[in-house]
Length: 221
Image (cartoon, rainbow, N blue to C red; front, side, top):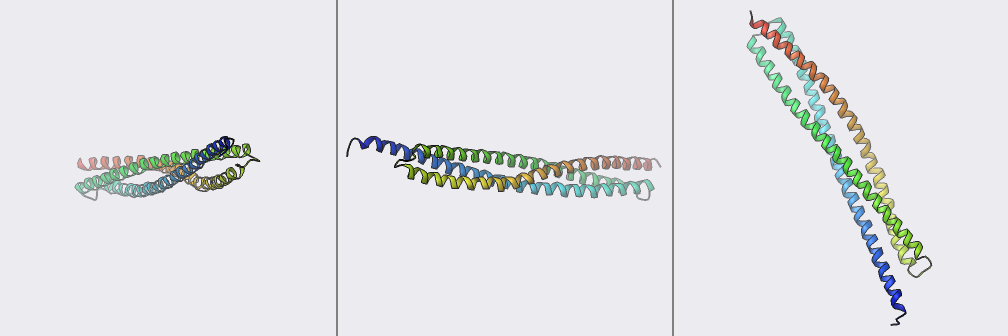
């Protein structure tokens, strides 16, 4: 073997190692992107399930509030034994406490899922950026070896990474874009539910206090 060919062979070996590094890096960044998008999708699903739980808790809270209003009317009329009024009020109070705990737990879990989804989308975005940087590095390498024997080999690897880059870009636009819309919608709905819950809770507590006052008056007679 001619000693003149040794530098060229060394350069080609070095080039192959560099391309292999870029190819592996692109593959790893894509896998990480897909992993984070999967985790984000799972978090979004959990968020939606938690939101449904808050909705159901709010529905029950409304029903209990109506029951307490009816109880106030009954206590005001004094047509029911005091022991029954106290028992019914205690039942409604415990039901409110259980519903409140469920609402708080579901809301806290929803916010946790929301933050997890956002975090995973951001991580997927970083992986997408890294994939693009790898493609850019290979494109620069392709220009450097243009018109040489290594050009075809480099361009083949560049084409593979470029196809992958288009695919990860589409994944980010389609999946993360859709999930961001869901996350923004959930954020708005959670805030709306919180305002409605607080308003209803305040009114219900005032009504329950009215029942206690009515019972106290009945006990004086």
